[in-house]
Image (cartoon, rainbow, N blue to C red; front, side, top):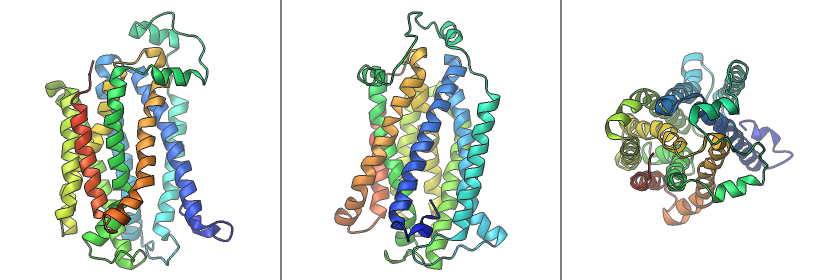
Length: 344
């Protein structure tokens, strides 16, 4: 993806970059869902909140390393972050290469060292019905989608607004902060100051991921005190306020406070919906419904990708900071919808 500009003689760089982004996003989502199903399969019901919280801790640690990689390469190792129009700076290219190596290596380690329970063992652990179908076909997915549990239907709307907001933050954070906080013109996307703003956004993303890793340690205890549903609602609302607060900030350092609040939401988004979901799913359908649940991560991102640009251009007058405010409102809506979820 960061080398898309090198292929401009064959295809437009924008199309290559967009194509690689779609491939990456699809691959990440496909890879993550079996891992989430594996957490549910390997844990008894009373430990699943803890299991998903531990997974969130590990995601947070990895995301901190990845988010800080461009800044670290430039400021610690002297790798250039300057570029010309149409090219990606070297510190970003190296970050992608290092990230790819870590990603592939860590997944291989998991595949080679983790033993899965057999379907018969899972059935005995979870008192699953013994007449569970022995064979599944791709066509069964449509039937399963139609017959998804009620809790899953409720959570689908929570997920929609949560991931709609996340996608808006990921796409528009750099231009919004460069324009609204650093005071750069919207047309400036290649100056040294813009690259510095982008590196600072990477640090800020590392902050919210670091906060999420720490907050995830406390999620099981908080959920035990006030319930998983209230925990998730509170976290989403705090994250929404964090995104909305960016509009009122003029000092880049003060954005750290916004990211702390966003970190609460991110930790909960990665753990609580799945902890609530697995209690409503038959054990022998865990992988299938985890995959279907992923639709409600991908679909809102597609929707935001389609309407986000026109909203910023025509409704927000080209000012991307309002896209972050919209993401904050989406988080708050998700939190309110979560109050109606039936959590077994």
